[in-house]
Length: 495
Image (cartoon, rainbow, N blue to C red; front, side, top):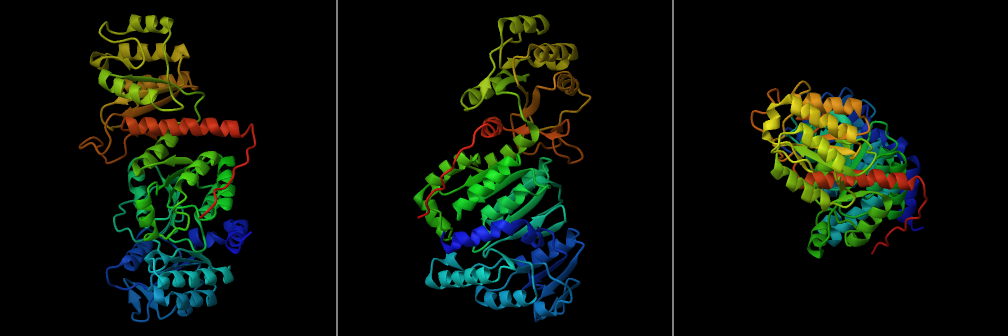
């Protein structure tokens, strides 16, 4: 085992202990903060404004206070124990600051600074090697980065990122590890859909703490239910496999956007995070599949897959019935369902079709996808009778209710009453509303709340929703098979 892998092994063994300083600090210092507009200033402002209740300090020899936060010449002068230091100094000054953090017994250091191996220069690579060597001999201080954007734990709460567009925070069960800092903004559309965030950390160049170590931490974190990741390369595949297996054993899906399918993008990665495994894309995709990690190819798919996990508990099967007031949407959805591996468009029996004919208007169809016709939207009796017939049939596992716009289904509306009755009388059926359009519907939700049904987010968009649902059902099926058989996964070889 080479030294880098051995270092990862050592970290994996005590990851839960050491990473507590990162996610649950009692004292935080922002080193390099100043009154001038900057990432450091935004990070300091966010820590204060979002209600961190521990000790906070700024460190900069040029100031005594920054926005009412006491500022000290060096971290050695900070009068309380610093669990987390967010370091926003120039790359050439980093080593001396790290040494001061070590003398102060800082638990975790989040390095925001750039100017390392991503420069693709001898100077940058040498500087990164120095930081890596420092991290290896200073194991008591966890090092995140360099070239990062910050860290978040909404359950603490600690919001130590440079995002100045955060309107409100919703704590929940989604945790993320991102090699790119701007991916932090993924939490905005999730929270606007009613999905809460647990923890997010950006890892940048990963000289010490890697994506694998953080997945391992999230696997055992009781506040994490779903793990998401933006990845430019798997730096330590052996321990990545261990972490992903651990998460799977805990029933926590991992949804990963692994970029770099083309050589041109791999060159861009070298100038972004200088990830060593950037050119192993094809092997990594195979590796992810074997590990049960859900690989997606866009941010939109990542977000919708998270929403689908929230909307769809473990289904009993893959048979889909689609019901709406729109024949056009039914055709679009049927095409997508039939084209998605792992899903099956249920074929209604002759008996069920005859029963539907007896309760539906003569201009409605009686097959799947089921178009109730626009007239049925104004006839609660027809709607209720149709849903009751479907529920009694036992011919599908998931009912997708089609909507035009992403707006809530009110519990006391005719559709809401019919669907909730179906859920109560037939708990084995999963009911998921899906809107044809996505985005914000002007004037839709009066109080600004996210569109929901029965307390859960709606799926939005046709093709992206079906792809997400296929990922969710496939993951549940694979985890069921995994509990019955033990398989050996071969880690890809790094170049």
